Amino acid sequence: MLRQALLRTLRRARATAAPRVTGARSIAAARRGVHCSPPAAHGYDPRRVDPSTAIALTFVDRDGARHALKAPPGASLLEVAHANHIDLEGACEGSLACSTCHVYLDQPSFDLLAEPCDDENDMLDLAFALTELSRLGCQVKMNPQLEGMQVTLPPATRNMAVDGFVPQPH
Ligand code: FES
Image (cartoon, rainbow, N blue to C red; front, side, top):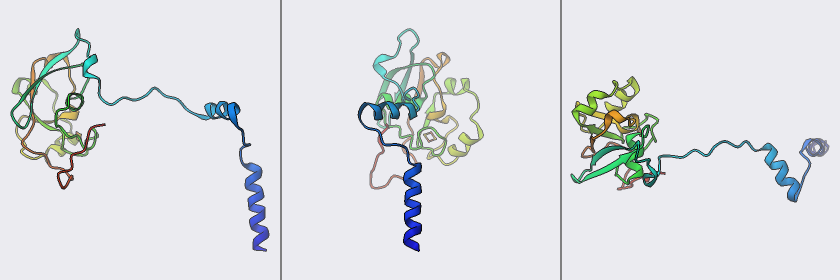
């Protein structure tokens, strides 16, 4: 009885399964069913920043070393840091779920920006060594008004990485 029920189920499954195709026909069939969208890219290539629109800024790393960079309009400070191998973590990749992209801005640049949203403020509350000039790097987007901005990395960040593990940007 059970065996017959299983056989019936198996026959029904075979009858409703898509016909098997091979070779060029299978590729064509697969193409019909595949949705294609433009590739998403994280960050940008610093070698391909358009010099006519590039915005100059300086990152000061945890050792006090200064890095003069050029960034395209619209790039976040987190993307600028990752594209230029600056040690700014960004564990949640800009989804406002961490404070590992915490940075300090210079006062004039800070004043030019809109107030942080509530979610950013909530995450900033969790940041290590918060100051009046603190922002989350993933939320600050480059624009021509920020030409000459100075971004300083805090002495440390608060995150869940242990044993010296440092996530790599991707
Ligand atoms: S990368 Fe997590 S909040 Fe900015």
